[in-house]
Image 1 (cartoon, rainbow, N blue to C red):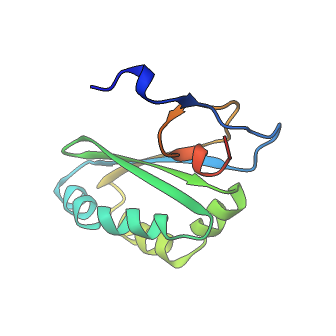
Image 2 (tube, helix red, strand yellow):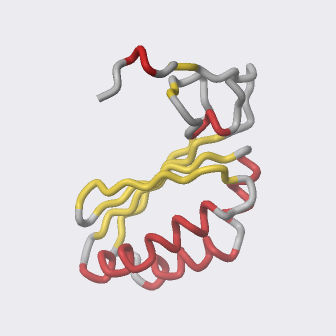
Length: 131
């Protein structure tokens, strides 16, 4: 394990009113159809989100066999809203419209209030704002 002395920890410079947003969305399978759909489409959802205009990074995590969470970093709330109006998001929501009880979906949007801490290569907001 590396000691704290072998790498530097840094913070990023945020403007007083940053445009960037963090979008957190979760998928919780409520039945077999939801579980199958979630695992079948998870990589596609991640890739479609990551390749959207204005998205700079997507992190996905497995909370359990029936739950996944994704965190995406966007240049602006307008970029995120544009993604919501696009074809990939429409395709994602088709299953939900046909099977409204199969998935529990949740999402939250945040603007950074202050810098996090980073080491080594930039991740998350550090990809948007120079240190």
